[in-house]
Image (cartoon, rainbow, N blue to C red; front, side):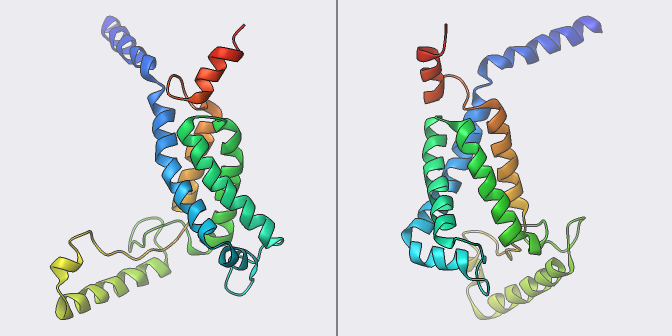
Amino acid sequence: MIKLINKLQSLLDATRSIDFLAPLALRLYLAPIFWMAGTKKLSDMESTIAWFGNPDWGLGLPYPALMAWAATLTEAGGAILLVLGLAVRWISLPLMATMVVAAVTVHLENGWLAIAEGSGPFATERTVEAVDKLALAKTILQQNGDYEWLTSSGSYVILNNGIEFAATYFIMLLALFFIGAGKYLSVYDWLYKRFRQE
């Protein structure tokens, strides 16, 4: 039995030769998310700054122009660095900070769930009501529209806008902060091999 366990462990250990795939997958998953978030803000900075600063319908943050530009450039620039695999540990810190700010200022009041669910440990009164409203909306669409066509691109859901996605991205960035860009398919690895080895 011990020999079998040792053999299985050896096979498992052999996968470490391709462990660069994990940080590569994290980088390539996160890059388009931050690119879209940053470039969307960048496309209308005047509105972005107003949203960052307005306490009534926005975030009510101090120094809204500075904060908006910092978040926008961090997200768009961070996406580029993630794709390149350059300064990944460095950019992970401000990207994690943007996720904390987003979670606290935008998503926290909505609870955990990103998509409303009517049951489970994270369901709230808000999400239970959303499920009822969604069921009614589907009934209306089925009675008054081409429901098959309307749902041909996917099911309808109600966005709860909780902290789930921000927390998930934060955890992925935290992993990248500790493991870095990975070997072989990152600019950092090439630069490290060229300039840091003794």
